[in-house]
Image 1: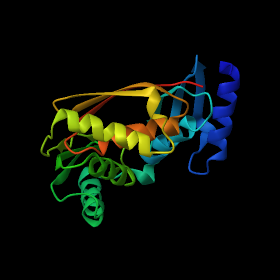
Image 2 (image 1 turned 60 degrees about the horizontal axis):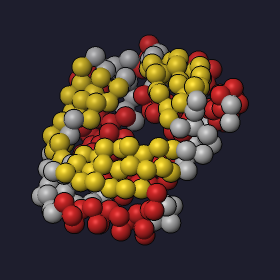
Image 3 (image 1 turned 60 degrees about the vertical axis):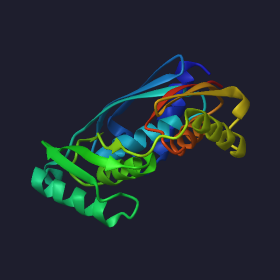
Image 4 (image 1 turned 90 degrees about the horizontal axis):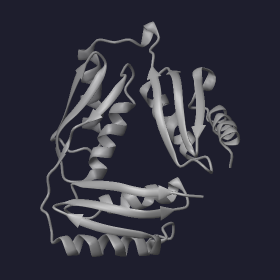
Length: 216
């Protein structure tokens, strides 16, 4: 697909998504890499715009350079934002009580610890929905026992084979001190995300080095 056609399709997808106001978003493409520039009204909208672009066939990667520009009525004190973030985290049963949040000039930093990556992802997602924030920086540490590296590798490969959305033969896995490296080629961002999620689900994984290429 040509870059011009890719830009057109991504722009159409942004227009189609009711969660995104595409009026102030500029789209460019270079050999399948899409860049989003401009302004949006919330951090959640910035996140949704990236997801919308990744859904488009032919997109290999997305550089999300969108800036959050809040309307005057949406601007809030850091203390109020932090209170709402902490309240939202507390009410979510997937987020452990060991997670904390700091706010400075509308930028949220998540700290503390968790046992699983899905708990970090949930905390980041929940915090990102709070009105008045510009960005979320996830610095939550993963703390869990590290099993044998061979066991981790085998369990991830088995998870790939069980997942109907993943072509396990096209992916390789390496492990070292809790870090998993995935290499290979997938045919869509959906398959890419499934593979990364499967790797994070293995016990003892503290980091995933994503070297997967999305090719069409």
